[in-house]
Length: 235
Image 1 (cartoon, rainbow, N blue to C red):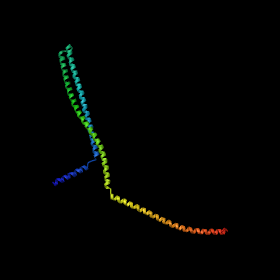
Image 2: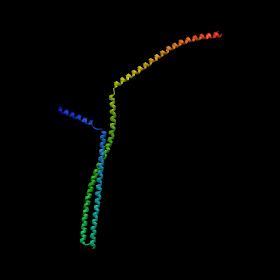
Image 3: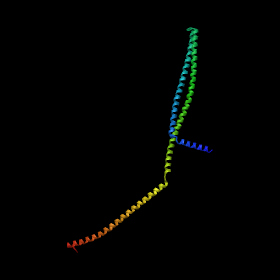
Image 4: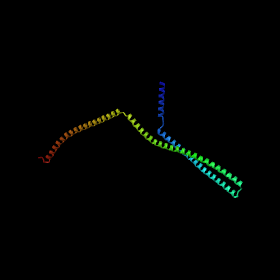
């Protein structure tokens, strides 16, 4: 029993491998359609040939019937000439007999040709049914091919998206976002620190300039008073 189970599993694996090794279903369907169209071309060619033979048999039957009627007319004319005395009775009978034999021969040919015509027309009817069936099958599979192409497109896109989603590392993405947030926060803190340093530098310079400015104003005042005294403008 175990051996049978093992063999069954081996058969299953081989079957799956064979399925996986199948060619592109689109290409296989297109090749199948090409084969069907070739069969249709052959069937149409065969149908045309059989119809041509039916037409030829019909024309031959008509020709043989015309000849048979012509021989019958000739036999009548021969007997009429003998009756009038224009032709000997024995000779007229002989020739009329030959004409009637020809008539019978052509009637036989006409019958055979008519039978051939019937047979060819029956064959043509069967071939025409095959042609119509092939046309219907080709039309069906052309529509199936369009649907198959659409399904393959959708399934391929779906498989690609699902594969990408399956390969996504959600935890890694979240960790990356957290690192980016921390990096931005660090950059903001660094910028704020530089701003404070710059502000401190400006404050010190302002104090220095203020102190220097006051001293300069006092000295300028003294120089102004001295100049006024020199000019006798002192109050």
